[in-house]
Length: 272
Image 1 (cartoon, helix red, strand yellow):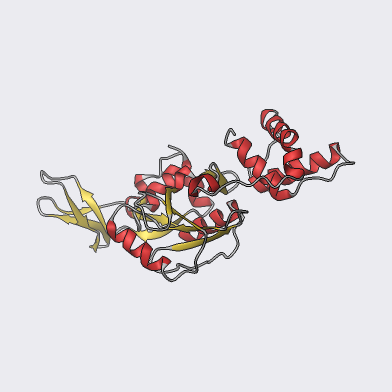
Image 2 (spheres, helix red, strand yellow):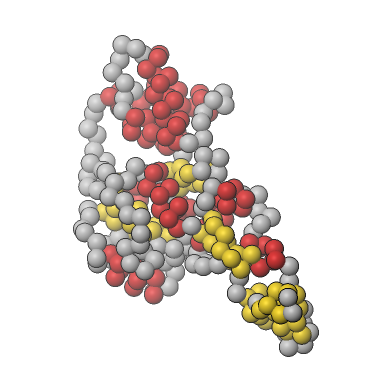
């Protein structure tokens, strides 16, 4: 399971989950270390598998121990590491998405309920405003999202990302988060794997200029750095390094912009 899929699975539960259920996953510790997951005290209940009728049981403190009562077996103590809880850190996710797509008009608190505005990605055919809602699996999710968007200013395109589900909401495009980004646990950030314009159906405009003239050169340089192991994990850091190498190799040329190099890094890593 990729780290982005693990993160989505936990976030989609929209609350506390038992850390013990995921602690053996190879990326669990990294998600905690980089803040995409956060400690959340203790879970409220655990499944009881000690009797003939498995059931959920509320965690209680009894005789100096944490545990639960089973109608058949009585009080059953549990170890602390069995009830420690974690949850997704939504603010960290929002900020990482905003960085990945170079968003403006960011918002560090929910628009309403569990709907967050990531920000606006600038696009020549019209701004693409990105939102995040934990799940879009039930009608109540869509209703809550619609109510939140009614409070927001208009945008040419609206893209809704979710950890699970993709119910359609009028005037928007809904896409699962794991179809749009990958999680770089080394660089502690998201890496784009999809073009927002393709997702929302925005037309592409060829404006000419330096980025197109240098496209093949930049792509070849980026691929070579991947092959020889010199590529940096973070997209922005790698783009700056590529631009520096380009300037050193082509001192008489006007270099492309950093944002253009960032786009090429994203495309090459996505196999485009």
